[in-house]
Image (cartoon, rainbow, N blue to C red; front, top):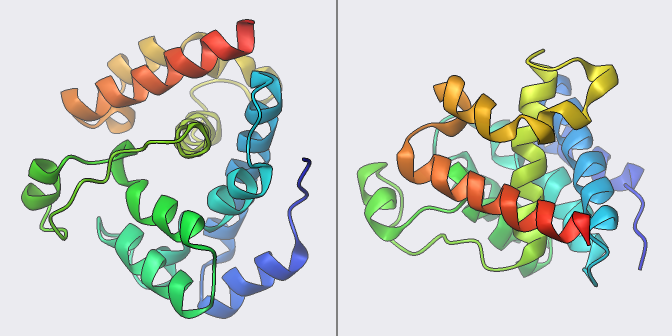
Amino acid sequence: MSYKIQDSDITILRKAGVSEYDIKHCVKVAEKALEIAKRTGANLDMELVGRGALFHDLGKAKTHGMEHGKIGAEIGRKIGLPEAVTDLMEKHIRGGLTEEEAKELKLPIKDYALKTLEEKIVIYADRLVDIITDGIVEIKNEIEAEQRFEDILNEYPKYGKNRKTLNRYLGYHNEIQVLMRK
């Protein structure tokens, strides 16, 4: 199944109060996630990939803090987004937190682990878009972000955050790269 980003979904982000800067980021993440999903050749829910990526930062309408995933999921539920999309929004913080990490970050204590390939692709795309947007690699050579992903995350703590988060991101990177090579 193919999926195209809907103008009506971008309107939802605007009406919720998401800044144009953050909307641009969300659109780039959705485009990158859809591209990666296609390259894996896996049988995926492309609407979940596209909408999950587009709405992952909906909570930034209210805060750019650690709780923006939780807040975004709450907003998403109120406006009727599918549960799979709101789950992804809530779990995307640092690539899927453990209960222990959630407690440390003062988030509701539960398991935020990413379980589906769709979720992992969105998180991977989010990290890649940050690397590209921040100019770590040239936009004209986006594939370099994938090729140097491990080195970049190790070199720039901003992207890897901490050892647990870094290991999660590297795990998603490796899993997705293996699929794309098949």
